[in-house]
Amino acid sequence: MDYNQLEPKKVFAYFKNISDIPRGSGNEEAVAKYVFDTVTALGHKAVMDEANNVFVRAKAAPGYEDRTPIMMQGHLDMVCEANRSTKHDFLTDPIRLLLDGDRLHADGTTLGADDGVAVAVMLAILDSPELPRPELECLFTTDEETGLTGMRAFDPSCVKSRRMINLDSATEGEAIVSCAGGVRSHVYFPYETVPVPENYTVCTLSVGGLFGGHSGEDIHLGRTGAISAFARLLYAAQKVCDIRLTNITGGSRDNAIPRECSADAAVSDYAAFETAVRAEEAKIRAKLAADDEKFCVTLSPAAADAFLTAESSAKLVELLRILPNGVHEMDRLIPGLVETSSNLGVIRPAEAENTYEIVVLSRSSVESKIDDLEHRVECAALLAGGTFEHINRYPGWDFTVGSSLQQLFLDTYYNLFGRRAQILGIHAGLECGLLKNKVPDMDMISIAPNIRDLHSPDESLSVSSMARVWKLVCEMLKNA
Ligand SMILES: [Zn+2]
Image (tube, rainbow, N blue to C red; front, side):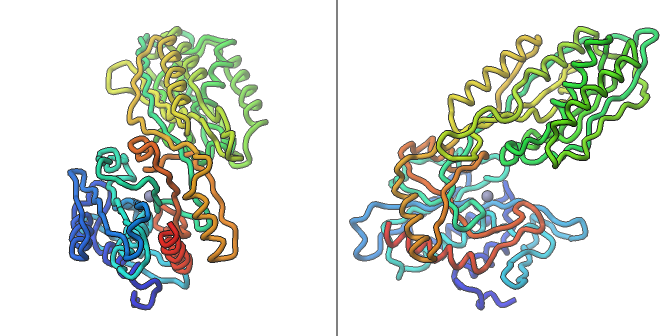
């Protein structure tokens, strides 16, 4: 493929260059050096910090010296996913680019348009001295995809701008203007065990077939989480017989709605247990979202030696029933946007002996609501005799009323393309939340060209959309 054919030429030339440099999360040093060397050779001032973030300052174009500066930002790292049939070493091999009509994609791997688009656009702008624009600050961050550690470590004292265009979303014609913050709360539930009581029936209870999805972006779809469904079944059954549980596992990642949950149970009256489980299952089934049509509850014979005591079993079920889960509140300014939610995402044996670990991921665009959810998780843990810890909290970004940057985006998009663009919020994290926390009066938007199937080997970038977004960014800088 001849990249010189693609427009805008400089953007695609830089995209090709960074695609040749492996840059999975945590492995950004080489690409950061490339960016640093490139912009320094172009005559700009740049610093590379200990986290390998690169911050660049470019003088205003002639005649634009009295305008206030503006900042652009995107992340250097990419998600590394390959098809099973594709041989690819993400530490050494370049991403092989393929063009299919308007779709630029990679040969069996993620493309890295998320967020290589931002890197290529910023480099192309820094390499275009003819573009009219104010003083420009460009921030290239690291490790967005796995821990936001680059932006966490970034020292904002060098930043002069109070307006920033982030280039890390995925849909043209939209600007994201609000995102959720979050926290992972780990609850540790210690228990005691006893041997199986005589005359108890031992079985495995499994909940499965649920659709799952992203715990932020899909939480409003009304899908059922497997752990909460599992707890509902057991709490109902607990009313009719004595139950002792063991080998409880559910969910795999805290940021995914759990699809499966199971445990072994020793029950005093199997017939009553089964009747109660099936009755509760019918209640859940009656209110399922269409995506969850494969929901199934299975009971099968099992064998196990030691079980939680009756008291520990009951307390654990009660804990799972009262931990916050699902949508709590919708945004008051942006229709359809979830403001606050929780995902009861994982239950598994903890590293400590005779302890279960339960993980709840809470999200909100309002900081005090995250505090509130932390407290609710704490209370549930304490009532159950457990302990808790909150990990990796990151701030959200609340909608700014009267933002001039939002207006500049809307006007410029309409003037260029004759279509109205939209502004919206997302119920997931963005680096903007962390930056807003460091520079509270920063006016920000997040925009991008059309990128499909992010984080998967099907990821593709629309070339024509990239060309429009390039025009849009140049025009916004001119009028900023
Ligand atoms: Zn990204």
